[in-house]
Length: 520
Image (tube, rainbow, N blue to C red; front, side, top):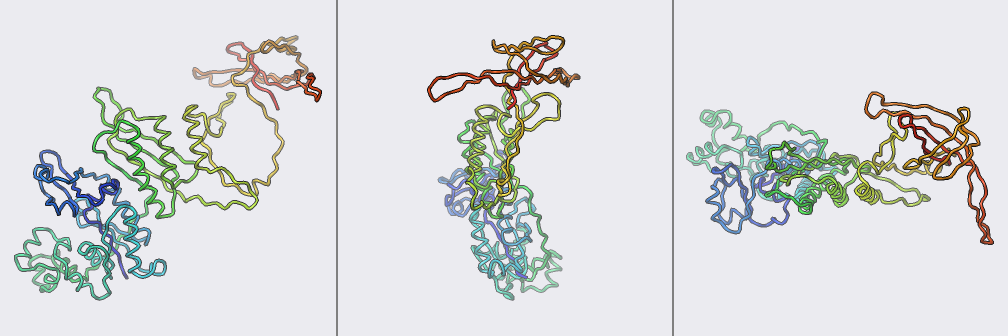
């Protein structure tokens, strides 16, 4: 049963660089610890070549020039670890995350079971290349190794650079070339073995089993099995996540929208790349901005959270960035931003096949951007499709976001049914009614007086009597005669009388009449 391992060297540094592509190929080091105990936590190969080493104090490290310094970010390492798991899930559903420094929270290694994957992805050599390419896509320069057992694959990935494929039965030969620190042995135990003259895994594997157990215990026996390439343990698979998250901590607070959008764009690009690996799209996106506490004594929230539920699955970062720009312009944070966290809820990617004789519909992404711009201009809750509320109050509705359904030939072939509609006047038109024997006979609206030909009503409605927004009204439907302009070919305009049906109402609280609408 072959296993593959993906290991990311200098993981804390690469977790920072993957969101700052301009740092690729430059010497970068990461600080950790609170002053005055700040030390160098990790450094990449370019920084080590200049003399920087992990464990140096900040004062010692500042003596080196030409090195970019960053603070360690556990949240960015968690996002990078999730991206590393995504690379493995593109090949196999059985993936476990382990790491040489897992006890310290450093998850830089994943192992996956590739047995049976040859039929889909080809030989182990081809699978290793695919894993390397996937890791490079999310911003990692990773080591990938394949071996017959997971322990040998982990040791090979952490000990050899680039790509390593160990033929079956040759694990002890390959692992024997590695130094002892490739086995994850503590530093004090390595020092003890070095005093015995043990320098490589081959030297350690050749020791007598009983002597190793007597001096190092059962832990020593486990290390010896790893050195022999025969260590065996079950693989504990991780569950596929239900959300994808990326985070970036800022070196200095950001107050303006443009630099904030620059950071958001980098995070969105990484999220979309990870989702495309699994052929998924984004159904809902949540932006959480960590804010710098204000100097005033007021208790202000430390986070600014905006959630956008997309009407259509999206997988393009440019489209999402435009939506977030419009939303943040309408709802800007009230304090400088110190960190950005974006959470995406994945959904199945939208796929559709247009009918041969159906007209082309507008691009849903462009339509959503247009609706967002209209909402920014007219205000919240004024754009979308209306939904009636569970109330008897007239015109009680809210505007919901449009949900674009897929067009089908069956829906297009349906014939529209003839229905009556009423056009509502906004605002309603003030009016005055004359009654005889309790029946409306004349209506006066906007200086025009008309006789009532027929009427129906009244219908009384009331509600919210328990609150300050109590309302009560009487409604009537009346038919009146109106003048309709008529145009003739000889350019002489005349008018002819027609009848129209109107809805009028009386506000029982203010004792006023209104013309509410006209029936079509």
